[in-house]
Length: 434
Ligand code: PLP
Image (tube, rainbow, N blue to C red; front, side, top):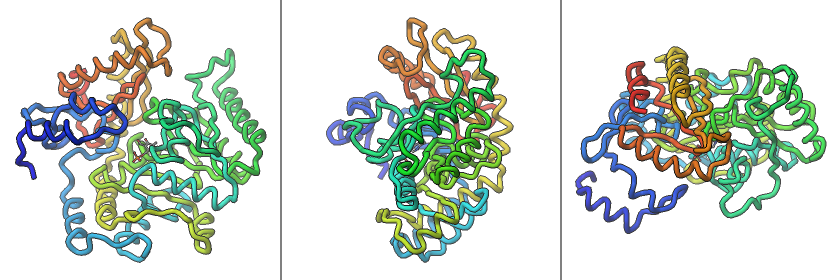
């Protein structure tokens, strides 16, 4: 491996490589990345790129993995490269389960380890349905929950419903963030209460005996870094308790430190969801692994009943060995504290850029996660009116490549989500490259 010429790679790619979320032709316009170091990636011409969004908000420790992660992964690979997840008893699985249970608040102690965020959410949906005996799932518009059948349908963005919105049992709710509501004269507390009243009204109209789960991203990530207003999640918790509905926080994008807390839901004091899913940050994307954590009462239910969901590669021992050391690294090196220290610097520079850029209308930041809303060329509100913006984003992508930035662009949003280990100077370097 690693000895092909650029021409050989480009030819074979043209002939056989298919893209998934983008049309196949997109592959011709991307640089050929050959290696990474720290928070930088390098192409076949030796050009350096700053990873401005941890790729898909996942390469949280950059590209020089901690020695402890490398060693543990290699050791597991050498000692026992695979053990079927259905067998249950395995030291790495026991250790990782215990570690995650310890760092999660409350009694979130039952752990399933699928391979991707989408699968973690599939497991969560199955858990809620089997546990409650009900089937409807309520999700926010603008959220993203994955690319498998149920998780895609749970996603609240019509642009993701390729193949049709035909999977039954998913109900969409509006996001409570005042960003989208012009409730003239209402105080923030009144707005939050109105949003909660709407959610409860929706549940009552759907029939509380049919609603299994409320499944929200703790902070909407790809859909624009949208944080629920103070008090809202506590209200959701109370509504879920009232109607015996499972509360699920999808932390696939923000879990393991992105927002300046270990998990995004922890910004809402006292809230313990019934289910928490995470992925990306658990191994910092070095290997595919996700988690579906549930509270004790749900775990106990499945001591006597099968979950009825799984996959061959779930609880993969090598990925779990990698995750265990990665999570320990985050904690021992106080990466969350580092994120908290850099957060105001990110916010200041994001605001400054937004104020001076003619095409940026709004910005939002939390921890090391920022987002710009790019305006339509006619200056109208960018929210979801993306047709004209799509073209502008092609230009952004070209500019990013030229300036040596790797970005994540989800029109109308441009994200800023560098690896959590980025230094202050590197962060400022990113803004210089904009
Ligand atoms: N949930 C959220 C909030 C995500 O951001 C993503 C991916 O970006 C997913 C689920 C799906 O994860 P995966 O791509 O690993 O299947």
